[in-house]
Length: 189
Length: 289
Image 1: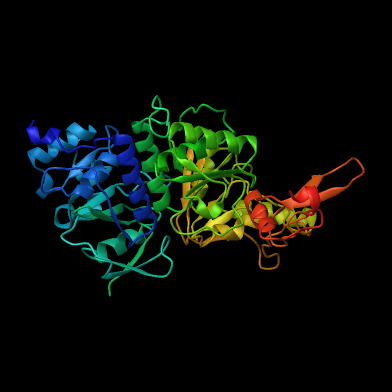
Image 2: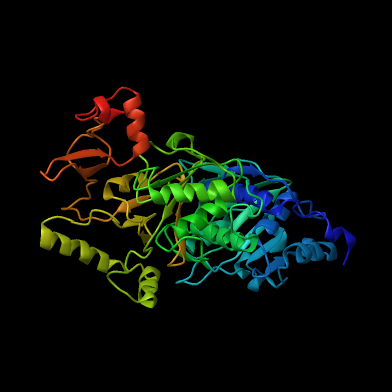
């Protein structure tokens, strides 16, 4: 195990994970809004926001897939040490972390079952930038219309067509994150 | 805050499990997500589901309001509020507008909710089809196939028997055109407030081990028929304390001669109106104090 992997977890897990979850909840409930989180210092190239999400949501019961550019020894060690999550192939993952290029094709990920659509993956996509502009979002959680800089629209449109099955997505960039649930209707502008 | 408790009582592993269920619930509006409900230091039926959802959502900066049938001062509301004061050290309030998290049993506050607020419902029976079909395997299949004909038959039988849809609370809604959802036993007067609400609405059923959610601004349509449209009914009176005509009323028997009074179920709303100078039929003098 690399020594860096031992550092960068929550200092006061109950409080920091509570604040982080609240941001994650608001992000997933209000697609297109961008939230600031803090508390994790994961090894590069993982972003703070992605680290916070893993620390808040993952444990030994949630298999995690690391996409190619993040599948490094130090990242593997960090995730294993701090969450205890087993590292698995894309098909078996509850959570998947990577850049969009790492995670495509996204039809590898679990979309849940027709009677248990909740048994699906949550993707954490590391983004070079994250802004409230670009693709047009409508649907639950959005009053009128929202915009978000998505890596592409076609994959999310295909995912929406599977509703109520489908994967859910967090987009992370530095210490900021945004949510994109399967229920959101995505249109290119 | 008493340091012998973990923040908000539950251990971190449990909170992660509940938080994952809440997020899936938000992503699939109206779908009941199974979760591994814990034993809480209160009996089932006292809001163990709501308490677990609230515990998973609370942050130290929150201001918590707890209501039971609209009232802040009933046993259930007081004990849950004190539970979180003791285990999470959060501030509490009775004012709807000041609260960031509101746990409720069987009412939606009269004061409109806003963005940034979370409304947590205590749910006894989360499955809207349960009294029509007792088998979980069957109701799950019915949700999968969007087979909600049985619910319409039930509402039709109401009309055939009573001349109107007699279901007055626990009135089923269809969420975002997909899942039929049980809004918990709120009066159907509150159903219109479910829809397009700026707040996040989360539902926790402890004994039945289900969590579900309505994201902000989500559509929730009360089931009805073209010729028997849904109506949000209430007692046809004014509040005897604050004279409100548009709030949900409780009927209170005041003696054994059949005298009765009607008062707002939402105690915070009623008090706010009285403080603003509104006086009802019995609201003057001592009754108004």
